[in-house]
Image (cartoon, rainbow, N blue to C red; front, side, top):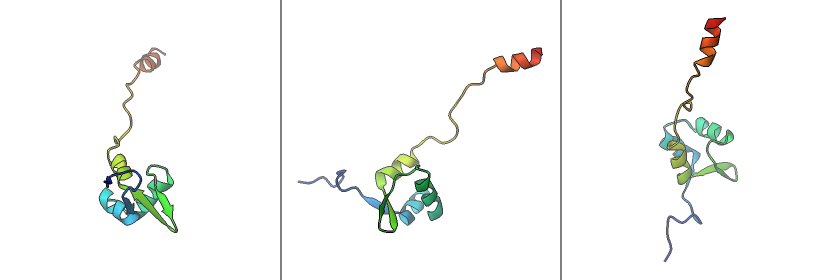
Length: 80
């Protein structure tokens, strides 16, 4: 008995399918691949993205990471 969700045979999506799932353009998907934000496989002249990779990208936190402000710098500038 074989498991269809096995990592040996992952489901691959085209750039167009990925763009539709992410609600972005195909060019944006190519940019994400180029920048390393989405890992893709190149087969011939085309890129294919695993569905788990699309889910990983969709579940990433958005925005800048929280960094509390330091009040020390503000106090020093007022004192001068």
